[in-house]
Length: 277
DNA sequence: GCGACAG
DNA sequence: ATCTTGTCGC
Image 1 (cartoon, rainbow, N blue to C red):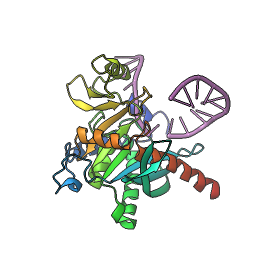
Image 2: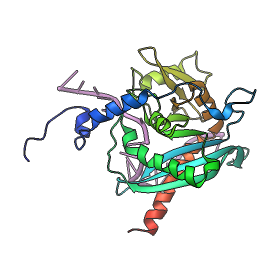
Image 3: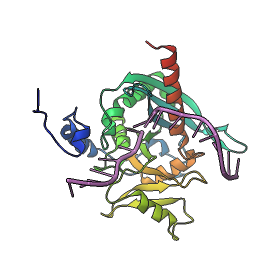
């Protein structure tokens, strides 16, 4: 095989080993038809309270960490916190307590390609959900917070949507960095947050050039200027996503995801160091 | 052609 | 994502 390798441009270069992107886009377009943007949760039915806080208790968080030496070794973590059970994390600060955690260490073969994160990370995360549904069904999360975007995505179908649809679970997308979409840029978001009209707010709605609302930029921690980016994953309204995120934020990153991040990294170190194989 | 690009 | 120490601040 010599010069027959097709020379392409843009996204394709990064994905040289995979000519799958065409397929992936079809997959996303197909699955997107099943996304539900709007409140559609069964755990709040039957009470006159209204709102999301009344009967929400178990909130899950997922994240994937990678080995520093071998980036193909991944550790996925699913943690569940109980909003009604607080643990101390400072003088007068408290955070929802972790009541369950599941891990899976595996070798990932699919590379990360911007816009296609789900094809790399969704499989290991779906396995964790299945594992938990079997091992601890009574603690299975009512809502899942995902380390990655929901509809804030070039095709409106990020990892959080992908997981939500395939697991049929209400999900919330949390981005720690902005994925530029529809003219939305970090500088633009900064301006919005600095704008006199929003200066007292901790949250700004992300409206793109098209007029579409993609999510919200939120400065969750009191002092940090760097926002997180909240977007609908599945079966929730943006308003509910925001209020749930607020219930979980003692730090910049909401507790379920923060714990999944911390613990997946720790688990990977322990597993690798103890069992070098 | 150039820049941008979640984790 | 990961590589990385100290350091400024509440």
